[in-house]
Image (cartoon, rainbow, N blue to C red; front, side):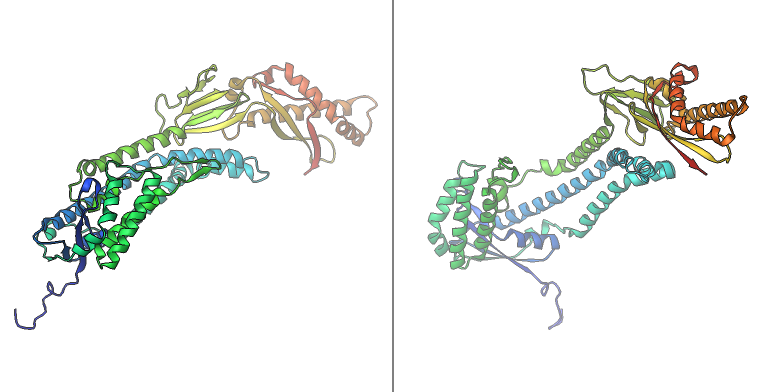
Length: 497
C-alpha cells in the first residue's frame, strides 16, 4: 500500500470495552466486570471492539475475555431465537382469534339489539360480524381484523429491531490490551466484595431483604470503583445494584389488602453476563418449538372458548350450520356441566334447537350461526287493516306471548332473522278477517245504524274483540301448531295511512 493511503480497516470506528476480573461472585468465584450493554451493542451492530483487560498482576488468563464475549454472543442468539419463537406464537395464536372475536361480537350484538329504533339493524350487523349484509366474506374479514392488527404490530416490532451480526470469529482474532493496575482498587474493595460473596453464597434466589442488602453493597462497590477510575466495575456494579434493587421492591398490589406473590431474584440470571461458564443450548434449540406449541395451545383455547355459551331456563338457542363449511356433526352441542337434563335438542337439516338452563359448547362462528330466543314475555307487533269508510285506517296491536312448545314454533318459522313472521302473518290475517266479518254483519243487519256509527262502535269495542281473539287462539287448531300462548288485554291504537 502506498504511503499515506487510507486504510478502512485501520481507521474503522471501534467500541472501547474494558474487562476486570474481580472476586465478587458466590463461593469466592470470579466475575469479569464489564459494560454488558456496550458489549451487546457492539456485537449486534458489528462494530470492532477495542478491548482492555485490567488485572492485578501479570501473568493472568487473558482467555477470560474471549469466553465472556462468546457467552454474550450465545445469549444474544438465544434472545433472537426467543423473539422469533414469540412471533411464531403470535402467528399461530392469531388463527384462533377470529372465532373468539366473532363470539364476542355476537354477545355485543345481543346487547345492541335492545337500543330503541336503531338497535335491531345495528345488533344484527354486529352480532353477525356483518354477515347479514355482506355474507361470509365480510364476516370473515371483520372477524380477522384483530388478528391482522396483532400480526402487523409484531412484524413492525421485528423490523424495528436491529439485525444482529454475531460472528464468533471476530472474538478469536481480536486484539487485547492488558494492564496490571487493578491492585489498589481490589485492596480498597476487598471487604465490600467479601460481603457480596457472603450474601450470594448458597443463596441462589435471595428474598426481598437480601436483595436490598445486595443492592446496597453493589452500590458501594460502584462508588469505590469510581474513585479508582475503573469504569468496567462501575458499569457492572451499577447494573447489578439496579437489578437487585428492583427485586427488593414489594410486589404489586392486586386489590386493597392483597398483593401478588413476590418473585425472588435469580442470582444466576443477574450475574450470567459476567460469568465465564457456558450457557445451556437446550433452551435455545427448543425455544422455537415451544413458541409454536404454546401458540397452538392459545389458538385452541380461543377456539374452544368461542364456542361456549350459557342459556337460562326461559331461553333457548337456535344454531344453524354455515352451509359453506357444514359437515356431519357440525350441529353437535355438548353440555359442559352436570346436574341438569342436558340440552333439549332437535335438528332439522342444519338447524339445532337447544334449551337450558346450562352451559354448553358448539362449533363457534362462523361454523354455526346463533340466535338467542327468549321464551317468555315476547312481543309481536302487527298492523291490521280496519274496515269502514274512509279507507286506510289501521289497527296497531302489540301482543305479549310465551312460547310453550319451542319445537313447534321453530318448525313454523321462516328464517332465523324473521322468527315471528309466520305467526305475525297468521294473526294479522285472522284479525283482519274477524273485523271485516263483524263489520259486514253489522252493516247487513236489519235496522242497521249508519256506517260511521258502526265503525265507531267497532273501534270502541276493539279491546273486547281482541280479548275474544286471544281466547279463540287457545282452542283453535291453526294456532295450536305454533306452540305459543297469547296474553289477554293487548295494547292497541288506531292510525290512518
